[in-house]
Image 1 (tube, one colour):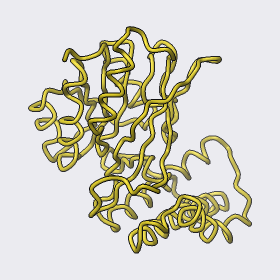
Image 2 (cartoon, one colour):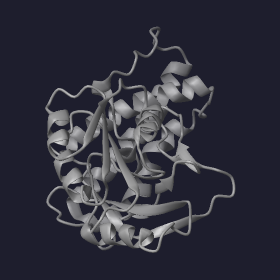
Image 3 (cartoon, one colour):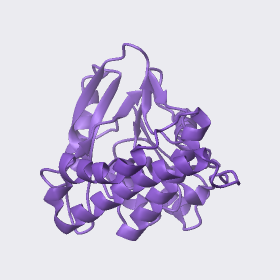
Image 4 (cartoon, helix red, strand yellow):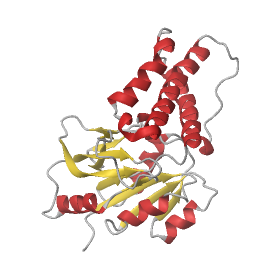
Length: 276
């Protein structure tokens, strides 16, 4: 089958262990697969190119700026954004093809469910919590936010949004330690963003952020159905939310005298990891 008029783009940094599965799942869905790399040292660029991607280097400047750069490199008007640890299963690929089968899709943007898959799981748990962000859209009706930490598509006022049936499989957790390390670094970026925007979080939040966010993840987002790993990842999530507020408090009260160091490519963190 011929590919729909769709560009697929990813941003990547040291993803050689995961990006192969991502690309293989969608390379027949597009004739324009773009990988924007910010300086990988593990062979990500060569692997992506060998699988048919058009690999472009761009120094890391934050999530929004990096994805906006990738958008400008895409040839088609319709874009599908994936992270380098996400895999499109066959049923979702078929659903995306079906959208274009009769011509122009009915809406200028579409939400797609994303469910996290923990180590040892082959597919999302039937009760797994899922995000539903806009991932498929026309680039003349929406663009990624320019924010360095907030990862979302901003649509034109009045743009209608549909939904695509199917679920993106998100393999975000290499290990619990790796996850916590990423979330810790992401909390640095969040503290920087709060400071830059002049946002003040009240001090009382320090005392409730950890327990309330554990309950949010474990009960509200149904991590309890995922066994021991669900408990542990809910705890990691709660710790990361606590660190965001704690680091914000520390900086606001001038308990440290040196400014936050520039964010280097090696410190890039997938913001979607902090949402589960």
